[in-house]
Amino acid sequence: MKKQSTGFKVVSSSASWQELETGGGLLKMTGNSEAYRTGNWVPKTLEFVEENCINCGLCWAVCPDDSILLDEKGNMIGVDLDHCKDCGLCVEICPPNKNPDPSKHALRFREEESSDF
Amino acid sequence: MNATKNAITKTLDGNAAVVEALRQINPDVFGFYPITPTSYIGEGFSKLVADGKVNTEYVCAESEHAACSICVGAAAAGGRAVTATASQGLILMAEVLWNASGMRLPMVLINGNRALSAPLSIHCGHDDLYAVRDAGWGQLVAKNAQEAYDFTLCAFRIAEAETVRTPVMVAMDCFHTTHTTQKIFLQPDEAAQKFVGETVQKNPLLDIENPVSYGNFDKPDFYMEHKRAQLEGQKKLLEETKTIFKSFAKTFGRGSESVVEKIGAENPDLAFVALGSVCGTLERAVKKLGNAAVIRPRIFRPFPAEELRDKLSGVKKIIVLDRCSPAGADWAPLGTEVRSLGLEAEIRNGIYGLGSRETHADDFVALANNFEKLSTETPHWINLRD
Ligand code: SF4
Ligand code: SF4
Image 1 (cartoon, protein in one colour):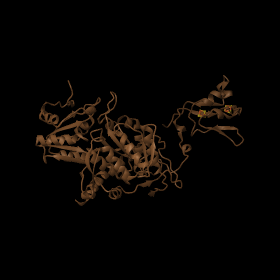
Image 2 (cartoon, helix red, strand yellow):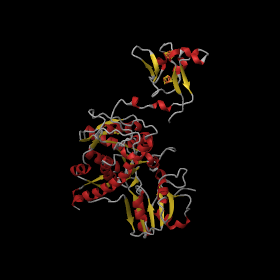
Image 3 (cartoon, chains in turn yellow, blue):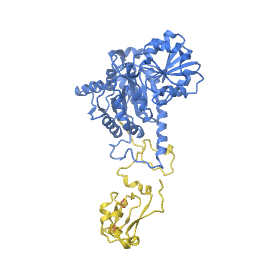
C-alpha cells in the first residue's frame, strides 16, 4: 500500500479555499481542542475582581471548561477568557457574590462587550 | 475485442455481481448491516471471508449508521472501505455520508434503490438515492447487473483518485437489478485487480509518526472555505469518472465510454431521460416509437450537465422520468435538473414505478404519443389509478 503524507502546512487565518488541506477540518496534530479559542463566542465577558476573592476554590471546582486559572500554589488568579463559555456557574457559586453590594463581588459579567461570532 | 473474449461469462444477479467485484478488490474493511434488497451482498461476502477467499476485516454492525461509521474510521485510518445498504438503511446512514465526503474519505457504498417508508415498501424507488443527493458523494447509477459489477470496479478508482478523494456510491435498482439474474461478463481476477490498482493512503490516522486528527471543528472563519474546497473534489470526480469509464471500455472492450449513454435514433425527435433499470424498458419503447432515444445519465451526482446538453441538443420533445414523488417541489429531482439545463426543447416530467408499480414499454409509447396533452406545470403520474 502506498502512503502519502502531505507534510505540515500552516495556513494563515486569511487563507483562501485553494490553500486548504484536502479533507475538511483535517489538522496535522492531535489533542487540539485547546487550540480552539471558543471563548470569543460569548455574549458577555467574565471579570475577576481579585481583591474581593476569598480564594475558596469553588469556582475552579464547578467550571465545566477548566477556565479558572490557578497559580502553582492553587490560588485563584483569573479567568481563561479564550475558553470560558459564560455559563455563569462560577458566578452563582462564588461566596462573595452573595453580598447584596455588587462592588463586593469577585466574579461578574461585563455586559458591554459583544462576541466576534 | 480480445479483452471481452478473455472475460468470464457467468449468470448472476446484481448483488452476486457486486460480491464478485468485491472479492476481486479484496477491500481492507467491510462494515455491514443487512437490509432488503442488498442483504445478500453482506451474506455472500461474509462467506468469502469465512472461506479465506479475501482478507477483509468484515464487521457486523448494530445499525447502518454504525456500518457506515466503521467505514469512515477505516478510510481515515488509510484503508479501502466498503458498505452496502438500501432505503431506510441509507437514510439512517445519512449523517455519516456528509462526514465521509466532508473529510474527503474515499469509501464506496453499494445501494439497492428502494422506496422509503411509510407506507412500508420493499420494492424499488429512487427516493433514497435522491434524498442524499446533496451529501457530496458521487452517485453512479447502474442499469443492470453488468453495470453494477463494472461500476463497483470503477468506484474505488474514482473515489481514491488524488484530485477527487471523495466517496462514491454505486446504485442499482431494488429487485429489478439486485435480484434479476443475467448473463454477465466478469474480468479475470488479475485484470480486474490491475484495473482497480492499489489504494494510496493520504494522511492516514494510523501513521503515528505523522499524527493527524480528522473532522475537526470549523469556526465561521473557515467552514465556508472548506465547503468550497470540497466542491472542487466533486467537480474533479465527474472528470475522473469520464476518464475511468473511457479507460474501462478501452481495457475490457465493453461498456459505454460516456457518463451519459444514448440509445436509439441518431437524431431523435423525442428523448426519454431516466436513471437505472427502467432504461432497458425504454430501449424497447424507443424501438417501437422509431424516431426516439433513451438518454441515460450513468452518474447522477455530480450532475453531468454538459454531456446531457450535448446529447439532448436538437431534440424537440423530452420526457424526464422520475421514480419518486416530487414531494412538494414542482417537478421530481431528475425532471428539475433537466429543466434547468436551459434547453430549447419542450420538456415534461413523468412519475413512474413507485414501489415497483409495473410500467411497460407500451406505457411509455402511449406517454410519448400523448406528449401534447401532458401538463407543462405538474408531472404526469404513469399507471396511477385516478
Ligand atoms: S462562566 Fe462558566 S466557563 Fe466561564 S469561568 Fe465561570 S464556570 Fe467556567
Ligand atoms: S468562587 Fe469566588 S471567592 Fe471562591 S475562588 Fe472563585 S472567585 Fe474566588
